[in-house]
Image 1 (cartoon, one colour):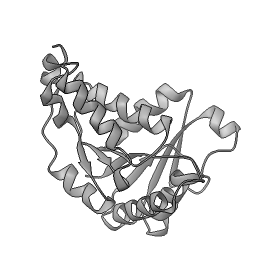
Image 2 (cartoon, one colour; image 1 turned 180 degrees about the vertical axis):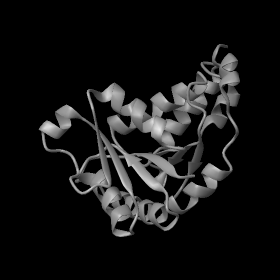
Image 3 (cartoon, rainbow, N blue to C red; image 1 turned 120 degrees about the horizontal axis):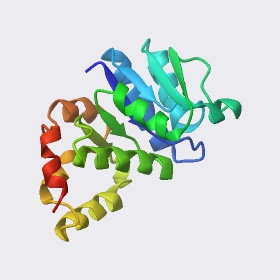
Image 4 (cartoon, rainbow, N blue to C red; image 1 turned 45 degrees about the vertical axis):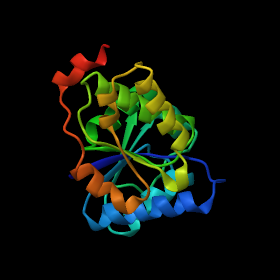
Length: 192
């Protein structure tokens, strides 16, 4: 495990427990010499996460579209900053660079990134581990919705093995190491 893609929020107005989870995640990545791949932002959880990795001597690659650079939303102290033409290219690049995808709590952007990578996994396009960090039950409703989708056969019950849910950052690396094996041949199960 050399690179982990982390989806997270740009909000600065959230509860401190979400910042604490980001700081802990950053420290773990730095201590284990794992490069952070993230959206390249300088504020909110995104900025705190990147700074935590950098403060611990780790490496950070930000992937950000040009319009966000133009708006000065980018972090200017990263190890590497990759500029994309648009959001679609950004998400594809982030997923490709990471050896796993991790979702910290976030808003619609984080939810969209997480659900897209889950969709890609269901289709056999993405076969890497996915970890949902359910800080203080933040993702309980999403997890229940995904369970309902399987219960009502909008997807197969086996699809619930595409991700692992953990409660805190210190469980991320174990969840990745123990993730259910997935390969592109499992795309046959995408159709019910």
